Image (cartoon, rainbow, N blue to C red; front, side):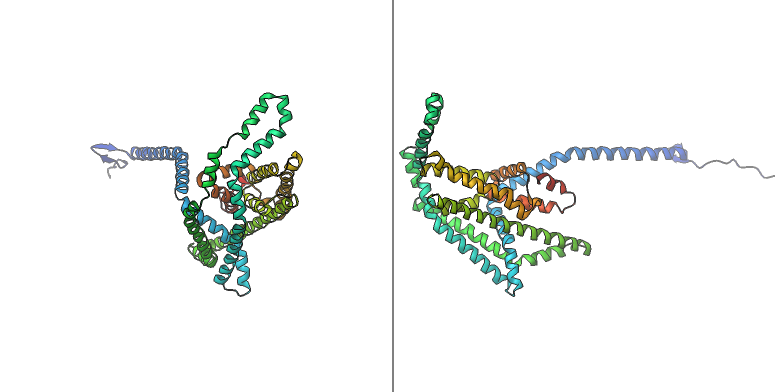
Amino acid sequence: MTPSTPSSKPHIVVRGHLLAPSSLLSSREQRSRNASALERRRVRRLRALHLPLRILMLLAIAATLMFASSLLIPLVLAVFIALGLNPIVTGLHQVYVPRALGSLLVLFALCSVIAGGVSALSTPATHWLRQAPTIGNEIGYKLRRITQPVADASHAAAKSLADIGGGADSSTQKNATSEFSLGSLLRTAPRALAATMTVVLLALFFLTYGDRMRSRLVTAYPGFSYRRIAVHLIRNIQIEVSRYLLTVTVINVCLGALTATVLWALKIPNPLLWGGVATLLNYVPYMGAITMTLLLVIIGLLQFNSPLQALAPAACFVVLASMEGSVVTPMIMGHRLQLSPVAVLVWLLLWGWMWGLPGVLLATPMLVCLKLITERLPGWEWFAQVVGR
């Protein structure tokens, strides 16, 4: 008869204590629970830091953009010039004109047109700027004459309006005249020439080697499917941005030409100057049209004594700008490229604060480009919806 051995489960001795398998399992579960709790706390802490880190990142980007404005403004301007002229250079390349030669010809034509316009308009512009203090006095005097009936009815209103014309004296006029001396022109000329040459050279390189740079950028992607998506994305964005910039430039030039024609018909001096100003200001949505309207009100007050004749130039420009903004531009470019007025104004304030006047002129093209890019980037569609109309 064989003695029966008691069936016993294996035990584990840990530091002199006998642990059953159930105790070992419970200690493992406890450790895993503790580890998961620590992981959850770590994730919550990281989520709590997510918003402050994003704010700090945005502030760092804004500080970098302001600090490097002298470098970034010519670069961004050259990129936009290259994108706007790229369809013309591509068309020349299709008729067997080398890309480098086509880029040189297009840039030479553009620089010749700009130089001719600046040369023709610099003299009247300098004359108007030198006469600014006298213009202020004359406008104040004419405003007092126009508002004299109101002054008879309300003495307080007449007093407040009469103070408008008494702000400039001979010393102010002397300082304003001395600002346009030959010495100041010679001091600012080298810097302006260096900035112009930088923009022209960068635009030339972008036009000549842009396609090659795009191909090398695409080949940096690891897989064939990613490369195909990147090629399609970059090509579509480049085509749409180029089409937008070229179309907007043509529309603005046509608006400036019509403005100059209307002002010439109304016997306004230097109509080409104000047509060029209207062309430049139309790159700034809403604020550009408002600024140009106020300028034409001032010019009308200087040229005419009758209130109706004085307001005629501004009224004609308002009609032209309204037709351009509500009929011509949506009909040519469609509503897809329309932007929210609130987003445009906030964007203008932001870039005007960081880069000044160049930032204001470049803000809207940058916003349109960013909208076109974010429409095709996964996870960034919300930005395109926020800034769109």
